[in-house]
Every structure is written in C-alpha cells, then in structure tokens.
Image 1 (tube, rainbow, N blue to C red):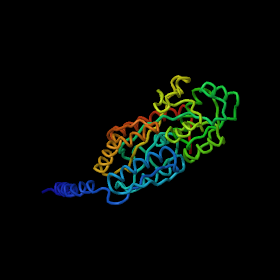
Image 2 (image 1 turned 180 degrees about the horizontal axis):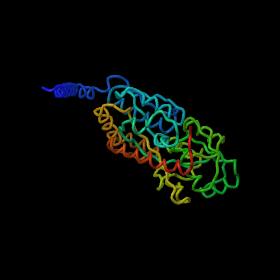
Image 3 (image 1 turned 90 degrees about the vertical axis):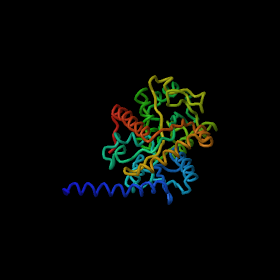
Image 4 (image 1 turned 30 degrees about the vertical axis):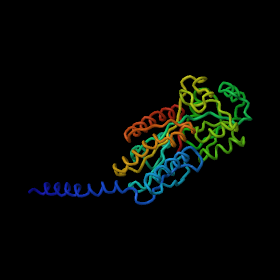
Length: 324
C-alpha cells in the first residue's frame, strides 16, 4: 500500500478512536468547577447576568460555575485571559457589546474576538437607559439637549469604560444632536453609577439591569431608553428616538468560549441556556431587569456577534474614535 494511503488510514483510525472519548467527555462535563470570566467589577449588568446563569448551570450540572471578575482596558483584559485559556470548556467568557465594539475601536488588540472565540448562546438583549442625577434640571431629552448646549464643558457623561455600549450610546447621541459632553470612563458600570448617584457626573447611558432599581427608587431620573421601542419595564419612559429620529442602540449578553472548545460541550451549554430562558424563575428575573430573552443556536449567536461588530464599526469610524 502506498505510504500516503497508510498515513491517511492511520489518521482516520486515530480520529475514530478519539470519538468515543470526546463523547464521554461531553457526557461527563463538567467534572470540576468552571469559571465564567466577567471583564468588569461586580455589580454591573454583565456581572449580574453572569451570576444568574452561573447559578443555573451549577444547579443543573452539579459543579460550581464561579464568576471571576477581571476588569480593565475597556473589557479587553478579561477577554484576553479567556481567549488564552485552555479550550476545554472550563473557562468561559460573558460576552457583551464591548467585545463587538473594541474590534474597530482599539488599534492594537492581541486577539481577534470573532476569530478566537466560539459562540455558545445569547442570554438577553436589554436597552440602555439615558439617565441623569436628579440635580440636573432636565426632565426630557429635549430639555437635556438645551441644558447641555447652554452649559458647555459642564456636563460629564459617565460610562463603564472606553468602547463599551454605554460609551458608544453616548457618543452616538452627541454625534446626532451636536451636544458636547466630557466623557468620564470607569472600570465598570457599578462604580460609574455610584458617582452618578453622588452627582460627581451628570448623565449616563447605562445598561438597564444595573440602573433600573435606582430609577424605580427615584434616585436617578430616566429620560429615555435607547431602543427603537419603549421598555415594558419602564412604559412611561420614551425612547431617545422620539426626540432624535433614527437613534437606536441596545446591549446583549451571552456566553462564548476559547476557540477549539469541543462542539459537544458548546451544545450542552447552549441547550442549558435555552432551557433557562424558558424557566419561569429566570424569565421573571430577566423581566425585572428589563431584559428580553434571546434563545437560539450557537450559529444564531455567532451571526448576531458578526452583525453587531459591523454595526458598531460604522459608528466608531463616523465618530473618528480610536484607542491605542
């Protein structure tokens, strides 16, 4: 038999021998604790949703899914740690809009998010909410625009970091209204909200889950949501687009893993995500946070990630934004 035929036969036999082990690996997975990396401090929307689904996975799979907060560099530190981890299903990343924005915003990333990860599943899509400290006199988007233009250099806009959906939602607002605000980036939504509550900054386009409690308590004033339609959880709050035609932005949260993670593990986790999104307890918590469940396949989530990357690339280029 020719040598190349022998080598091909050996390779085929090797793959055939490995298949039962791969199947067994997926069936047994996980056999030890799994970490979900959140690239922000505790308390923000990304962290809240990671803990919600981490508890669900732990309950269903009998192993602890623990949250490891790795904030910094606009989400890039945690993402880099996750991508460089072993692709065995024991390190996962809570993906969020910053992952799709940073691809065009940062010039010298050490990774390519779409290429270096595998999508597992989307959890939820949520609006951002344009909110102000109650000391700001504006009670509508139109009043805020007039206030900001009348007070140049005096309005500070907080965000959860450069390149986040919170940052870009504010930049989109400035581009479309001509308003100029000073951007103050934080290492996550939670510390930014703390300063907004204290009046150190005046406005923020926060992810709804991390601010809705403060809005309901009257500690922050919601001027508008950033989606094309109103949020069922804030039915009396208009959209930014009602005042600024064409404005739309929203945030997503889902799970990805390092490239090379076994497909059987991806499918097992995806099935659990979809099961969780049907669970009355989880659905009630997501509703309370203002989120819309987004069940689907890994391929559905992958397409959404690609679409979001293309969408925000246009915004980044239009705003002439760049971070070294």
